[in-house]
Length: 396
Ligand SMILES: *Cc1c(COP(=O)(O)O)cnc(C)c1O
Image (cartoon, rainbow, N blue to C red; front, side, top):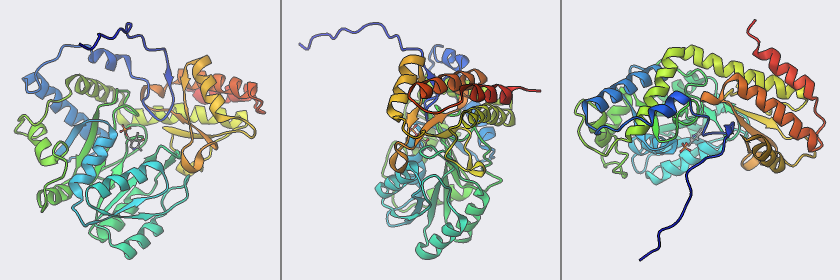
């Protein structure tokens, strides 16, 4: 017999989560997960699912019927989008200016797609003119882009322009809003995006595990007309919709506690209003941005592409970014992360999403970050940084 392992009681350390996700979970959301389970087809569960779908339509700003939560994290939603929309042999256009655009390419390839890319430097959004050129050169039938690229802290602006180019070329558009939906403005219907997906653990103050996704009628027509079934059984929308659509039949067991959590987080968004939620992110992240700028460090992102939910803070000359990250965690309980790929060693990535986007976090972060940087030999003005954050947080 294999011996029983011994492990202690679960006591997670107290953390302030200011990395690229997960973010702090709202106490009401935490409490919702400690409530009793019901069956996955219990009338109560069906009501919870109805509420989630209504809440998601508000969050996405869409009337799309096919709006649901994928059982899995943001990557499962990404895989649901691409594997349902891409048939083997189709050309799929994705960006190469960040880590998650690259993941789109990997997933599209596994779905049998021929992947082509449109380029922009890491740290800059796609230029519509380059997207137009890529359409002329490759004639893709599916185009994916990342609204908030977490690896670089860049917001893709001009979304309507991108969708217009794609639709003129009879292609469908998939948007990744995992690190932006609920944090910054996104309008699915007005901007005419065919498929949009997100995650729960970034801007929604919830734990990972139930990921919002929405398909418009144009996208659903293509899904219904597929010649080959989706290669993933679990993520095949025709099957998943048996559970989330009117039939409410068994497809797989819904992650009940995680659905409770998502429902509570959507209730929070409704109570504060979507505009109010965007404004909270902008205000708190704005205070954080003012703090690092006045401290003398600054962001590596142009103001017009600033993504309040993920701030790429420059690593000051001569400072070891890894030591700063470790000390913030060990001495202050604050989690941030470093740069990826081309930005490794150049930026810290400081998230300001969901329940982490609140004034106390900005104040705490600026004080802790400034003191660690000063200890590590950076030339920073602690008082100017703290003062700028405090001023930016004033409401009058
Ligand atoms: C986090 C993230 C993902 C992946 O989501 P997981 O929940 O980690 O699977 C995809 N895209 C973006 C932009 C992200 O920030």
